[in-house]
Image 1 (tube, rainbow, N blue to C red):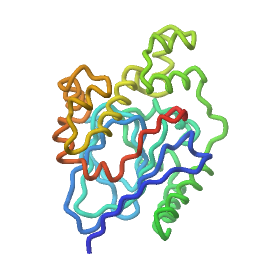
Image 2 (cartoon, rainbow, N blue to C red):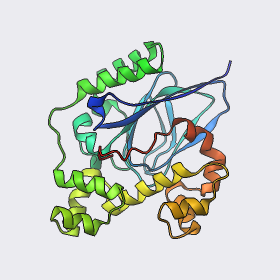
Image 3 (cartoon, one colour):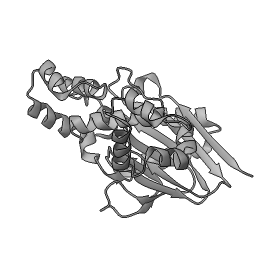
Image 4 (tube, rainbow, N blue to C red):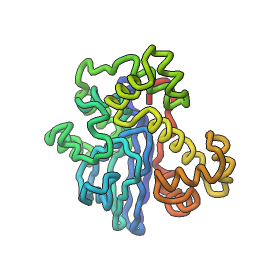
Amino acid sequence: MVVDEYVRGRPAAALAPFVAGYSGYRQRGVAPMRHLGLPSPYLTMILTMDEPLVMAAHPDPRQPPGSYDSLIGGLHLTPAVIVHEGRQSGVQVALRPLGCRALLGVPAAELVGLDVDASALLGSTVVAQLRERLCLAADWPSRFAVVDSVLRAHLRGDKSVKPEVAYAYGSIVSGQSVKSVAAEVGWSDRHLTNRFRAEVGLRPKETARVARFDRARRALHPGTLIGDVAAAHGYADQSHLVREFRALAGCTPSEWISEQFDFIQAVQLEPAHDGQHD
């Protein structure tokens, strides 16, 4: 019997400043697949329920391929490659960069470009119990509620980010220039860039680049004119967007739609520019 489930969910209100959303997935009896994990404004936590997550390639090519029962992936500028042989199941959690201190005890900057076992940050006992409870839960809403309860219990007190950095992050991902944001917070461009990078891991211009790319790729659908998407999202022309796709995704927009669209459309979160500094 073929099983092909993808379900999206939102975190409890108390977690909204730290978590953008959840994606649940379960596949059985489907064709083997190669999936690209593209750069996005979020860190990714994956909690498997059965088969391990097989990383054929990490964003950092120096990190060897491997299998993971749980994984946290930092912000990155090149794609990861995930493969499966027709079976996979788990919950994917989109983590807001400015929520890392509270949830994981470290700034997002410490994880940039890396994929690490979630046990290294949450603890092996917490992750083992979480995965066990996910497997025992009756349905996807129940599984998302399990993740809610565990993450809420794991919040680490006051791990707030400097207000200037928090304001700058929200402004940068919304499309403001570094110079204008620096002037608003009263810092020099260099000081803003240094403090921003120390918290987020990417420079402000890199963060803006990834956010724009993420918005553009979400607007791509079969039959969509790539030039129209480029114009709507601030690219100079279609060639500019194609170059960005090659740099950040390792393929063209047309290739991405052809090879990845059905999977991505099922699990991707809506862009969350909602004032939560995502």
